Length: 182
Length: 189
Image (cartoon, rainbow over all chains, first blue to last red; front, side):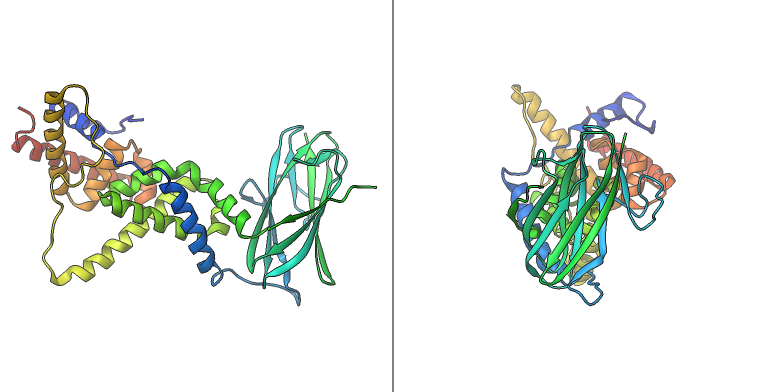
């Protein structure tokens, strides 16, 4: 922890000062402080965030152009694999090793009663839904960016395409993610 | 026929909060320590910590794409602290400077079973506290981060956006000044 990368403190007196510095007291957070701070931040932050998020769209409240497939926090503008079709992002997965994909949906307005349907290729499952090839949710979107993490598991080395279809009223948008398994 | 399961999920603020918590929570202790070293006082440290979280949540779409969220959060906290210092300096221009009172910062002193030894140690730490108060903010921060918190020069360079050479020079001067003050004060008999 205290590996020194300078050598000023060379004699005994200096070592005593260094010892004092290492012992310099530190306050500790009270029980519950971190939880309270998080709760305040997400409440206050949500209120401020709505004024700053960019809204895009093409005549629709569902801003499909801003759906970013993000894998473990890495922006998929530089995806793991070279792609024959540059418009379909891809990820690489390791057999039987879960990997979380964060779907980010940006909406210009709040949307109630949207339906999100995730369709999985053979050999890819969503954690918590064993054997299910298609899972659908009734969901609401807030104005701005909405995050949905999906934990995927590859059970066979085949791979394929995951589809996420967002429907609201008479509008829909389908997003594709290519998965290769090693 | 694939099974369709219809679930009610609020894919909105709850998931944003969960994503945010997952990103920041591993760094809480280190950030709390940084806040305390920057401000020197628990109440102010907690205000700074809170302000950081509010700001970071507002930048969640940036935060999820960052490789080293801990370093990013530390830098945001440091910049918030500097901004507040500048605002405070402007407000205080026409008042008398209170200074950093010796002994004020010694929250968290942990004693042992030996009261005499504890008393001696407490006195030394209070003298260290007073000596640190005589350093400039930059010198105090560099020596606390490096020698107390164990930050490497490279980490301090990234945090303060100051060249490594300058960090090293400040550390050297801070240590020399501390040595001078503590020797003069008779901290070590």
